[in-house]
Length: 492
Image (cartoon, rainbow, N blue to C red; front, side):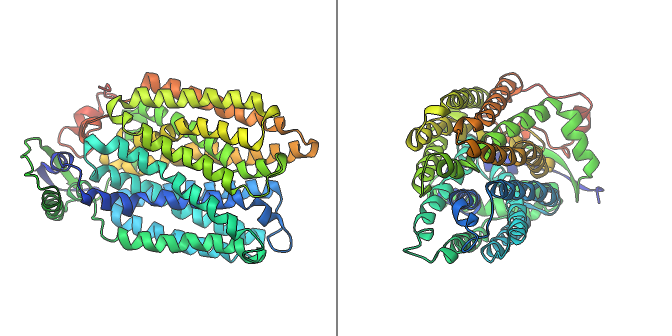
């Protein structure tokens, strides 16, 4: 399967990177990037409907600990799905997998809506996460390989930040859906999950028009198909912008292979790029614990300690600040640079979270939401950049699996333990009515974020404006063997 099938010299990467922004690129953004809206919708619906799920008559009779367990199970499914689908994405192509994983999500979220008992709900949440996890690997790799180098940072940060559009939408949707005077309490929370499947159908219709990654195609011996796709993109972009595209003279010589052995991929991550491996692991652990620990149980915190009956408005404000932060700060990741911006957003948001932990004893629902909005205005852009980093700094043949690997490992460490820890802290603190009982979780999340920012300052890669092939040379490039034996390249 790993046998060389040919050798070509191609200018496809340079041709894709020199394209001006056009409506065609919006097709890619809408068709692929909107998956984060689904993820935000899923997580927020669960966070907003904790009381509805606890009701033994109209809900499923779940406890706060079980709500936290359900969040952990969803993340566990996403971790397993990321690894499973990530390897298949690198082997069989981006397009096949981003269509299949969306289908898995649609089926699973419908099953969630029909939950009849906690065990059913847990199983459906695992499958939903299983589909979403595969989306992360397939989508991030496809987006980075289709978006021009000069726009890649801001587009990636904004797209990952669109998670919060779904979060805000989910929070607002739960207001009427969980109002028994509008919709029967037994059906409201089920309809909330069903709406996710309806949105996914619309995304699937758009996504069918997004092409396979030409970079993936020419490495896997399908250079004629890659050339045809790039020629079509160039014609479309030229027509849409009215610009004559300049010629390129930058080429790369590739040894084409049908598949890359898993041992080669593992050797690449742990032997050729050990510093980048530490960097990505640190970024993912920090942001995963911060977000999953705080946000999975944010609605429960408002209702349990601060007397909020309808958490949707608070979560919508919190979510909006996250998305605005990604949009506002995203361009700076291309202009100011990856290392400076990631370091700043991680360290600053971590320090602010630690301060919030000390203030918990005196907060109200409004002040806690304001503090959270300020913290995650900065944290959102940094967390999005973790996905950007993992998709940029490793060779193309390993891109999807590397995204999946770091997402799974980092999220397993922070995203599974976070909801479990916070669920336990809330149960324990609610017995005494003391909200400061959840402060240790805040302090831990703050410490991990600051530590990750420090790692970025020392090990970060200056990837802004550079082609993916110059950041990490493809394994199948003609002189790849020489570079593999030379140790980790020095970031420029």
